[in-house]
Image 1: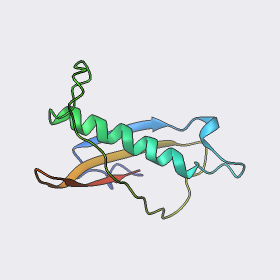
Image 2 (image 1 turned 90 degrees about the horizontal axis):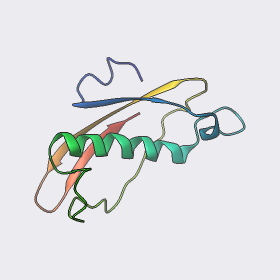
Image 3 (image 1 turned 120 degrees about the horizontal axis):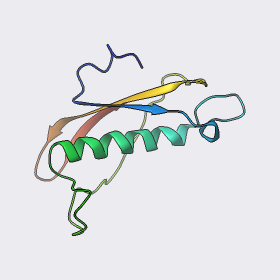
Image 4 (image 1 turned 60 degrees about the horizontal axis):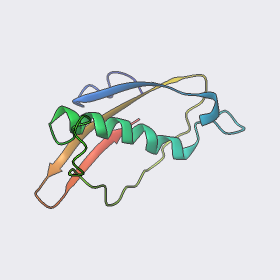
Length: 100
């Protein structure tokens, strides 16, 4: 993903694609994207003060559901960028946009 596509996101992570994250056709495995999203989501939560990696009190946000719409495969060798931002936040839930 180009930097221009991610310019509106408050968090952008640069991630290297590991050899083991690809399938036989050198496409990034679909499940790996959820790890990229997780990394971006956690960095965003840290940035806004809802996650504290140094505090293990067991209190924090819970991910109740997730989904992904795959638009095209990513090929290796590449580095991937993921952007994260909250679209809507309420006391009972939130909606996110995470792009990789």
